[in-house]
Length: 120
Length: 212
Image (cartoon, rainbow over all chains, first blue to last red; front, side, top):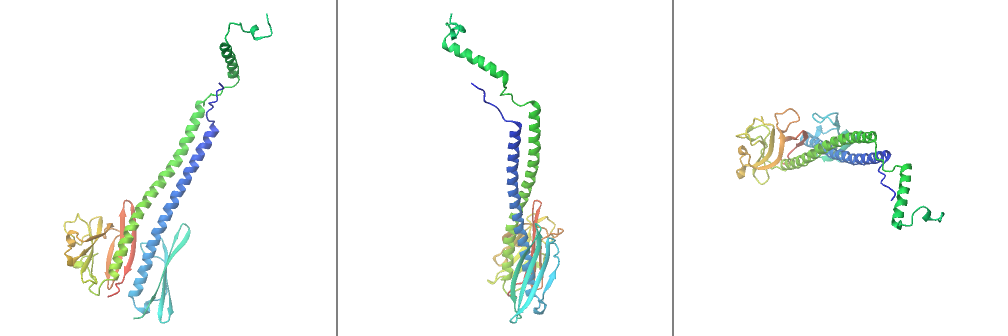
């Protein structure tokens, strides 16, 4: 007949609360990871289109004007660090590489497109 | 009288059950005096715990709400991104592979592109808002949809006919970022700015039709 319904102590409750809070924090951490991974994709998509833009511009211009150049910023796309065109001659063709770089989460990301342009 | 046995304490008339009950009562009284086991919390303890719990929930809850909002914004942007990249891919392909014909604006209206496909049909890419009584060059609504009309099939841009390619484009007359379909010589610059809620995604590229 000994009464054993003892209830929780304050310490036990505090530990339980801290554990629950810790668990919630981990869940939210996961959420923010997912959100950042998502914005990665958006930046890559924009950078890819800007790299494409440069390639099309080079294809449309004179063969002689296809030269190495660097744009240190792109209007309306302030997150882009620079757009670098690197040209080298390969058997009478021009090997063109366009690299678009941007900074995200403290690191620099980049996307590169490469093609050959002929003098036709 | 027997002074050493139970009968010295209890009269013989007690039953065994009564004896047991009595012993238990005595035992419980003695025990209850030394330890109180179901004491419960004091009011102060309860208030402290509730305050701590409320504070923790407040902190966790506000962080949670912030991340929920970010999640919402993220999912809207993902939706826009999918739609914009589809539209961009489609328009770029169409223009890249267009026939060697004329590339111009439709009836000299800004932000329209008229081009010919290899099948011989003429198409028009244009921005349309159904609230406009007649499709025209004044972009004074907030949002437009990008349509592709086949003129040879009788699609009429004035009434928004043709295939819908992309919704919720920011008006070309809005301050940047704005939508723009610009022809200069034989190249087309495409600025697609889509806004849903507070989120805007802008993508720019350029196309140089291969057959021109």
